[in-house]
Image 1 (cartoon, helix red, strand yellow):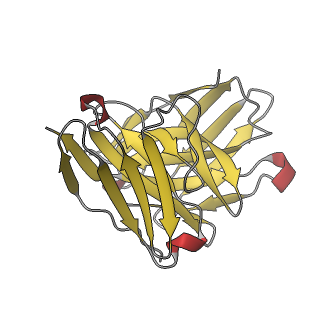
Image 2 (image 1 turned 135 degrees about the horizontal axis):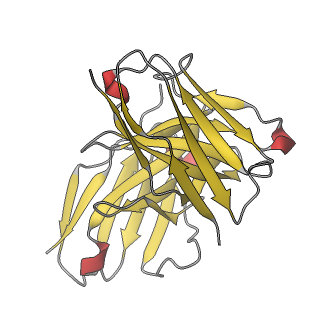
Length: 106
Length: 123
């Protein structure tokens, strides 16, 4: 079965750039998306189709996807961006989520 | 504005059944694909299954972990989707989220989520 691999955790200082990776076989050939989940809340879509931002998502969130790695980049990271982030793709009629990355802003 | 509200969660014994409901507003369940995603306590997101829109025949796909036990359906007259869960196992304990699945060929992403309903499977 298809797998997506994310680093379990990432720490970044406020104002710095956070880059969260998601690796999978030939992931660049698929549509990757990203969700943000804060404690006690439902996930929120922040990037879809590799690099598109839904309405209401700040411009500091951006995405890319090439070869075997999709990347979520948060520029000028703010304290409010501290959350769990999950990548997701579609493979063989199934949805696959990455294991999630806990982003700490300190 | 799209809103999804789940209901039907609770405590259930292993081997028993439970049906979750997802009531939608601001969308038409028949025109949209709907999906269920779950999250075990302290764990990550796990896809459960999906039902396509009527345009695509209302077909269903399921994760291997629930295939043959769970069934997704919908009642378009009520704008409601359902998740019928049979032969429940302790490992099915999770918060279950209803989502709208937006098509991005050849797959989907989930652009609207409900607040989730907790299912606890325990004797």
